[in-house]
Image 1: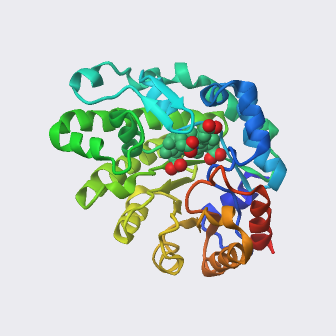
Image 2: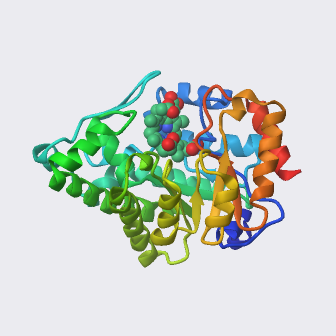
Length: 345
Ligand code: CP3
């Protein structure tokens, strides 16, 4: 099979397909018993990310079990801050913790973007392994966090409900904030280019906290940095498709982002009305989404009817079936099978 024949790449090239390609955000993860077993073998989550053999294994697990049309590299968006010199650790049951960047002195301690490969080279090895190990019809997605979302974690030192610490830094120390975004644009471009060089066929930028940016701040700190990263990728790899995920953006935000970043795929969260997206986004890019991930916990008829509704609404244009956000640890693996059957008929 030629690379361009893979369903995911055909949809991203703008083709309307009889059955949309399907994969899931966080498809390798704690809802799968085989993932929990491999993570235990690695010791902890970060050791798993940096172990190419085991990270390859967990990337393949959902492909073996479900035959998804795409595999997403197993890693995390917070590896980039770590590669820039931030301390990073995960507290069981709570989430990530990082050393914070809150003033010029903290920023000065970070490493230059060109240093990241030293820490991140095992990730490129995982990508290279996957190009050998994946079935020929499965596309390989690389990824990174977008600068704004990664900055929110670096500034607060953890996840926050409203991104208040990052929004406060924009007001109090705009030069420090802008320098951090600039560093992340450089580091993220270099990271994604290295993933593509190792064999990633598509890359995705996760801007999970884009919804906290209002008005001109959305254009300035979500759309523009993403556009700059994509332009840098294009200089080296003009034909690699990019999927963007400005989670929680307003309707106007989603339109501006789709028009101005250069993405081929626009991932939408579950709060976006599918009919609106079919009408307003699908003519500009391939739409990815947007089943409510909680339906994989609750299952039943609603899971089937919602899955079929989304497939139907997007059937007139390029579409990748996915969730509105990541699958949660309490999801039932059997419900994933039911969802796939409803998509593929
Ligand atoms: O299967 C995949 O999707 C690939 C791997 C992947 C992970 N994280 C593995 C992971 C991807 C693409 C991510 C992206 C990521 N990481 C995002 C953006 C997407 C989103 O969810 O909005 C964000 C914000 C992070 C940061 C992060 N990583 C948090 C906040 C947490 C803790 C919360 C949680 O869900 O546990 C993580 C941990 C994490 N990343 C896990 C996995 C499988 C769970 C770790 C474990 O095994 O204990």
